[in-house]
Length: 312
Image (tube, rainbow, N blue to C red):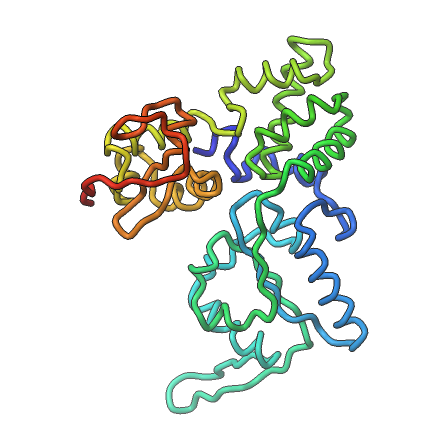
């Protein structure tokens, strides 16, 4: 999974390059306009009152810019329980309780802390415990980017990387980037390689199409792994419902990877649906894969259907 071109996860090799592409100020950050506006108001209001900013929690699928906004690498839902519990009083009362000594002679000492703000990032807000989540005064969900914002990001990145690209080439890459800035920058680098070796170094519409077709990234950003997941639901389980554990075993992926990496974009496209009985492939998925819908027909339309559930 980590080798997928369209994986929203950050590889170790990409950290240095991505760091050079990240904006340094909120004004340079492209997209997520509602969040930017709300954060700007939050910061300015705290500045005028000379107070610390409320604790901020950012969540959403990987690759959308949470780390860029909060400058944290670690996922806050992965905190050890002992660390999390120690944070409660620190976040709420700006104090931390320390136990001195052992046994009957032990005593608790409360240490005051200067006001501070925690900015947390997670792909799974539901994985946070309620006591921790409730201590964040401002919670924002990052959404997938529209093509226009991705084009702005691509234009900026191409300029920083000194990659010549025309507008049509930029549009083609943006359209296949799954609404994700991290992926759009990765595709730019791979298309740049293709342009240097197979063309004159300039990313045009034709060059971008040829490069991304060769990399098996289709016109809406699905790769072979995505198509395999859909084919598994459709061909092995008659379109679903199929339980998550069964689907993971059938695709040799772990359940967390399916939930956090594969499913968000497929759900966004309307290609799969989650039901109490398991995952279901929609008519849109059949249409995209050029398969006949169950019971005949051409698979056009957003409707769902059910078949006997595959048990986990």
